[in-house]
Amino acid sequence: MEHRILALWRVGLGLGLGVFGTILFYGHLIGLSFPLFIIGLLGVLLALSSTRPLLLRNAWLAVLLAFFAFMVAVRADEMLTMHNGLLALGLGAVLLHYLRNGEAADSAPVHEHFFGAIQSSVLVIPCAFPEIGVARKQLAQKLPQNRGTVLAVGRGLLFAIPALLIFSLLLSSADTVFGSYMDNLWQALGFLDVSSLLGRGGMTVALAVFAIGVLAYPYLPGSSAKPPAKTLAGDGIIDDELSADDLSGDEQPALKASPKHKPFIVLSIIESGIVLVSVNLMFAAFVLIQFTYFFGGQVFGDLGYAEYARRGFFELVAVSVLTLGMVLALDYVTMRQNARENGVFRALAVVMVALTGVMLVSAWQRMTLYEAAFGYTHLRIYVRISMGALGALFGFFLLALFRARPHIFSLGIMLALSGFFVTVNLINVDRFIAEQNIQRYEQGYALDVRFLAMLSADAVPPILDLYNRTEDTELRAALGQILARELLNLDNLRRYAGGDTLLSGNVGRDTAWTLLSMTPLPEIDWSMSIWQYRSYDFTR
Image 1 (cartoon, rainbow, N blue to C red):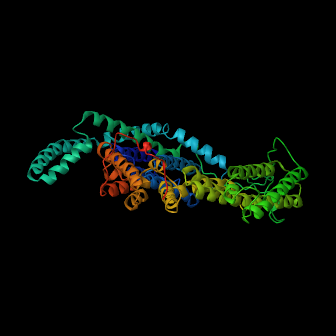
Image 2: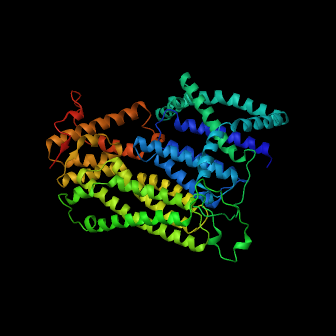
Image 3: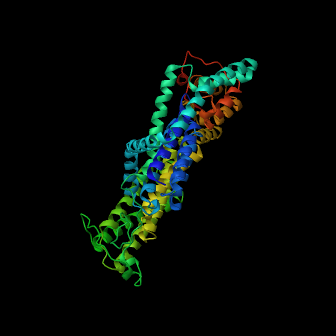
């Protein structure tokens, strides 16, 4: 199809998406409206990408984008909602980049993801205006040829609008239910409020320009589908390229070797080997002590087991991060002359990763004991999840070390980061924290009521359950004030911020409001803050 015709389609659909987005967002809280708009825009983009179709190998980007968009309508935690929205938009920028250049994202280096996302984010709005110009010229060319049809449509609308207005007034008077629906329609369209009309118009224009830019970006001049090139280079996981030592003799003549970019510092296998062996010996000694005192449960000196376990957690995580950076750097700067040197380096690196894995397990168990003794917080949960992501990165490092496929470590970074936020969403952090801290309270530990009050509406179900079950009058009074204030906040959102509509739907907020509205709660005591109770901690 001719470019000018496609431009007309993209501009028309972009305007439609602008109107659609205004209906979704104007006067509503961010909720179900966000995934509906994002999925609608993504669907139109993929439907129009006939000459630049989405590669099957890039479909995981669209799946992750849809997941984070939908989680905006699921979780009530405002910080997590912001992260989900930004992740959806960021993954959309990455997807646009690979739609434009036709490459597979899983075989591209990490800097390609980063700079590609920045480029598409910066250019998506500016590239809408040339597309609008092309569509305007096409429309101006076609209008004289269809002048009679256009005038006929205009006259038809001119006669239809008064008829619709008269009949709507009569039918509204005849039936009160129909009349209420018509009143809601006029209010939704903003016909009764000039400022609302201006606001809706501005939002429609902004969203339409954004949508047109998204639809036009894959066809920006200068874009071309580039097949992945087969090259031979030196070692180095940072570039993640195959080396001649990793290929059999039959494969080597088929590909032309290209020189490796020489690093600023070059080390031989002797120098790198000394570093790796020295660090491995220290790690081995540390791991031996872990098996003796920590994993074995022995007490050292005057230190109790829990006190010993909770010391040095962050240091172990720091060691793991530094180890990954060090071994990546050594792989990049170490020049291996033959397969034997390559094998020695790989063996030493595998030993280091294995020892670091033991330290990660030690850090995980230390955090488990720390949480059991002092309770659960956002930071402690996030650190535990990040340890899992770090362990996955070490796994991808080993795959890259043995050249499982080009740029496997770059793919690992993307999957580890995405996996972190997917896990945070799936476990519902605020509810999980409330459930675990309440469970500790029932086991005889102190319960920090002040911290419970800081959690989002996602945490209401377990807090409400404790409120209904507890026999401690002071704790019940404190929880009652927390829940009453939460209900007031949710009521205000529904009443004054448009939070009571389907488009503002959010599973966390709506679930909390439904439960609280059905529960008899005390009057809010405005004479004192929830923080002014006798103690922040309650024990059974």
